[in-house]
Image 1 (cartoon, rainbow, N blue to C red):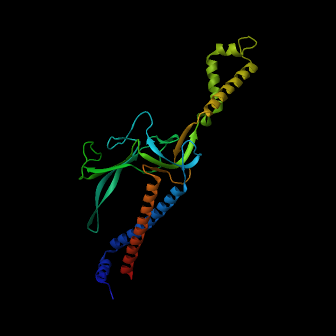
Image 2 (cartoon, rainbow, N blue to C red; image 1 turned 90 degrees about the horizontal axis):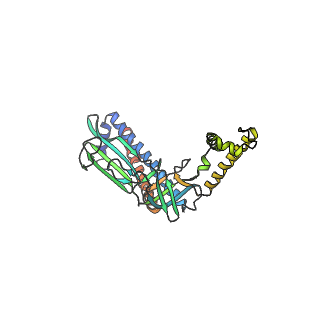
Image 3 (cartoon, rainbow, N blue to C red; image 1 turned 30 degrees about the horizontal axis):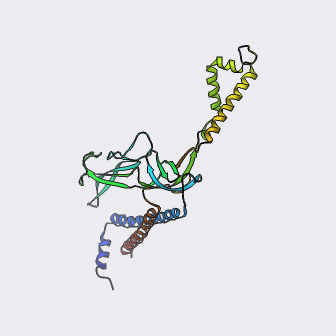
Length: 309
């Protein structure tokens, strides 16, 4: 016995044009697969957060770490969000245009991104033990502020915050003073680690050569006014010793700690939220994704069975 209305629905599905039927059916199956992938990623990232202990900046080991602290801006030029002109530590934006298209005489609309961008400016995380620099390039970001509004031009007017219009603008930001969770790859940079020793010695010797009278006074032991090979070799050894002493002095300082994207495929996360809030959000998204997966899979399979069964 058929359920009420099932016969009518089946008849309508069978009456669809073939392109329209396959478009709807395959779209349902495709989106169900995307929902499953998103759910799996959410569960994986929530487990990664749970398994990564929170470290202090001062005592953290090099490599994959998690910090919790407060976002701070660096000295110098302020970071300004482009759509609203708001000072912040990080921003991203999208500008979308409403497009219209037709499928079998049916009118559809969708939003198409025509402009977008995100900040790559460095900023700082501060915890109870110290500070480190955050390089946000490539991060998944949970911001503290999101604004969305509409207008009539491809770039928003600063004084307008409308709810109607052909264009939609969205800006996401984090601000100085926001709580900040960072999960990424920590590297401490020292000048001596990245310098070219031989090149630095060459620069020192070139400087000494430009002051020939000083060079002769210090190293011309036979007082003939010219440095022979032995005298020049002694000057070169002392230039090398000077560079080594400068490097040793640099290594006495802690260096600059920078956290950024890992060199492998592990997650890089910035969030103006606590670890518990981010984990909860990932798990909630995973549950929603699994529910959507089963719903869309059922719709796609049911449509095909109605058409071909």
